[in-house]
Image (tube, rainbow, N blue to C red):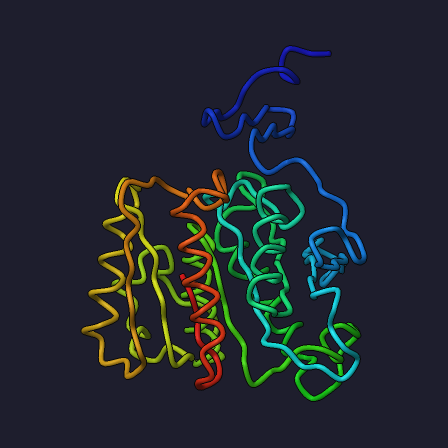
Length: 277
């Protein structure tokens, strides 16, 4: 092995290490929980490839007790991880989305987009948009995925994301309203001229008191509130918690309260296309 093959090109501990030979070591979200039918948690899951050329994929979840003619709200979930780690298939996100499906009684599509540093922004946005268009292709009973055709109610669609996934949600609902190519800026939605045209009717934003990104969430709330967008906007702060606490301690009182609030938001029988960030 040459010295260049083991030489570190970029290091961002404790998250990842990239080598000059192209290898990347990730220290979060690199494990894989297998999909399963009728698992012990009452949720069935399976994996699909959305874009074979790029590897964009997803894990689909349904309640195992779903009836053949039953239509349930559809959640499209975008995981966090700073655009360079995380996966629908890792234990943290598999367990979290499965728990949401069980508690809210919904169908969920958890999107696997390509990650940096191998694939830099805007790849995550482009992959997520491709996945959302693939989901939408099932709207009229067409499309390749039977679970979406049989069980998803496309009049009740929710986009949900945490951390970087919350930023993706913003970009997806803006894109859904414009159908244009992505415009910059996307990392900072507060200066996005399309903000007043979000393609959804309700937005619920969660922030955590000790999260280093808390101020970004508050800024997004204030900017959206003053943008002229006419939907229903709510922000809720969890005291004493840090970034992504609901993933790392999902059985804590705070995490359970957040889950219950999210379930309540999804189960409100209002207009189509709400979104949660």
